[in-house]
Image 1 (cartoon, rainbow, N blue to C red):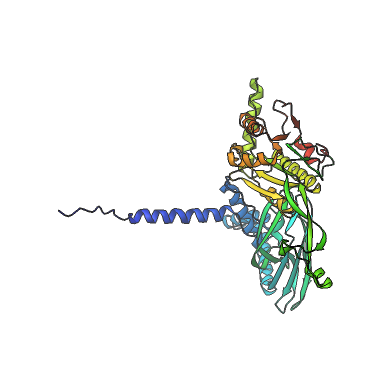
Image 2 (tube, rainbow, N blue to C red):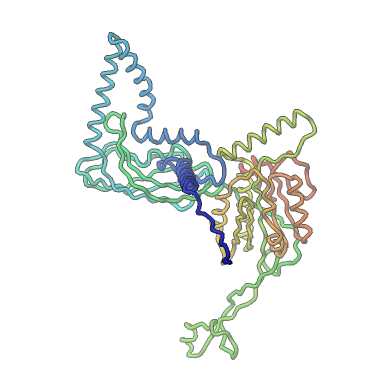
Length: 473
């Protein structure tokens, strides 16, 4: 008897259509929540973004692209006057409506005649620091025969994340000419920003309508956290001592340091032959190296916010519940968090001090994914480490468990660790116990005043760190 084969029917067409519609909706919603392209975009990761708040930015972006801000404020009142005059024909306000309408038509007609037709090139720095001014250079070419009046570059750039200190503008740009313009901006918050559009806008003649010309671009600006240098940093005693350089080390790694040249001997590595010296002497000369040891340290940064110890009294519990709700809502709505910003600022200062001491740093920032980087001599620079800190996002759930046993064993091989915590709850205490169980010497920096004070911790206030009052640890 022949075997009966089971045939699985294909997925119903409605299910495939539903998957397509769901995927299309998610892509369009992600595009909408990213905001209008006239503003700099700052990725929010997996955090919640309010569609209502983003609708406001879309309305403001499109409104300011067509009309000036004074005109946007006048348009609602003009609409009410128009409705009033249409309902009451003998109303005297009809004359005002006619005057406003004539001004609008004249502004629109002259604006179309002198519409800017530009070719724009924008140059901005790759990196800057939060709170520090930076400069954007524009090369603007007028491709039309008629001049452009009252030209301003990237007018919408200073309305959301950026703050415009002095705009890149020109009172007039003659036809078939080119001009260099520069604008000065400031970003108060660290992060990685994407600038997807550049435009030149003219509100000639009456400042009612705006006429713009631009192009789509893909520029990136990394804003580092602001930090203040440390004058003194004492590391705990590790398992090994440095022979040269820093006194305290985590582990010893072998590096070859160039010492000089000598005659070639049998068995020497041919890669070490110094060919210029060999050519001058007419005989083989090899480079001689000496062994050098260098220190390494682990820098661990906590990114979990909103966790506080339970107080004993009911009023304190209510205040803590309100503060926790405010902190989490701030993280969800993409607002600044002083505790996390202070932790990242302190991490940058510690990294700068250690790198100046010729020390290798292994950075670990736990979040949805563990961000890690090794910085130091011949590996990565301070800018690369600050790039990682700039993209760290706050987390509302404990994240230190992301550092699994394999990572903890790797940290144990280093010997010392500088740990920056935003609290001292049970989960963080267990993490420190796991480090000490692996014989890791820990320097604990705690950025909170509401926790019990551990004997080995240094309690720091976020406001003091951000103000630059912490100079020694």
